[in-house]
Image (cartoon, one colour):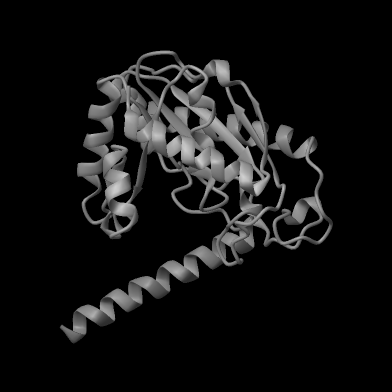
Length: 255
């Protein structure tokens, strides 16, 4: 029983209804009714974590998401995130958030992670970090891949948010679990590669049954849209990261 989380979900569903969002969810039976699991989600927009929690309500479960520390520092979102028992990620002290996530998993919680770390500007699956696999191995719990398509139409990086009544269709597929494996050389890399392949296949299935608007910003280049290619998006991410690093270095020099 989690009355705060249940209330927030009720409010979120009211917002989804007001927006006219049309959800098609498959595979929710793959969310375990009890016990810990890493919920690995693709990342195309700012709101996709709110949609990723919907399949978990079939077995009446809640997902504790790993999110940037800045979200917890915000005077509005911070108290909500803490009340929902989400996990702050401080990239300057990542070991602490990793340990907290493993502790949650060992206590039987569902922990939501983005293996891509940042939003995919191309809306294709980016390279993965190995954190999901390492948490699975250490906690002895499965990874549940969850793929969402359509969330980028509501609010994504570099484009205006569309939070009104848009009647946007959003597809969600919960894939079969990837069981935890005993630790050993290369195991985390193997699990990460398998997770990446599974999520790419699921994304292709969702895209195949989705109506795409030719030339639209939210449609991948390979499907006839104007989104950057994966290679172009990676270059944009690298340039942005370099710019932020330079800004941090300049701030330190000024101090």
